[in-house]
Amino acid sequence: MNPIRVLVADDHTLVKSMLAERLQREPDIKVVATAGRADEAFDLVLAHSPDVVVMDIDMPGLICFDAARRMLASRPNTRILFLSAFTHDHYIEQALAVGALGYITKTEPADTIISAVRNVANNLSYFSDAIRERIVQGSSGLSLASRPQTRASQLTPREIEVVRYIARGLSKKEIAQLMNLSIKTVDKHTCNLMDKLDIHDRVELARFAIREGLSEP
Picture 1 (cartoon, rainbow, N blue to C red):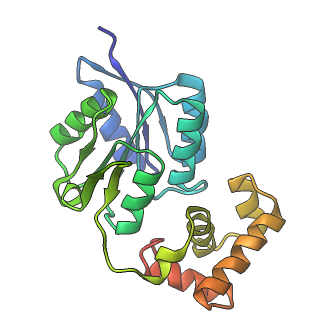
Picture 2 (cartoon, rainbow, N blue to C red):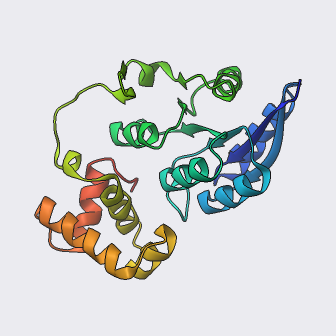
């Protein structure tokens, strides 16, 4: 039986190397590559076609959810397992929206992460308990249980990506390059954000993203 081929992506070198080393000890798992950025992870997925990508959600460069969307579009047989210290509703919603099969916290023991990798490799979902209890199975698949509407809930996935990049302090040109969009399109998304949220400068947009849990400070 072929081993489960895994790519580990995390910008913390120690976490990445320790996780890769622990996974590699399992006889049925092979770590084919590691990455410190989401865009690097995407390139490695194209090169290695891993069975599972274990990916942190908060890395420099390309936003991980955008990277995951591109990975699955290019390599539909690859499965995504997010590993993070953050469990904000917006992160879970975006993980489910891009088609991730798992989302576990970094507080989980190594055995749990290994079990998650095996489940996801077999096309089964796996979520930490604190996350699983907030997810429901509907006719269209997994989704987050209904919660009170917020200002952020009116934003499209693309608008959320743009505001997260703005919160990182990136220019429109830099955002356009990362998202493979024109500057004009990024500018349109930014204007839509400001209109919907009644916010009129980038600093306030960044503060909004942090307050709403769309981006980490």
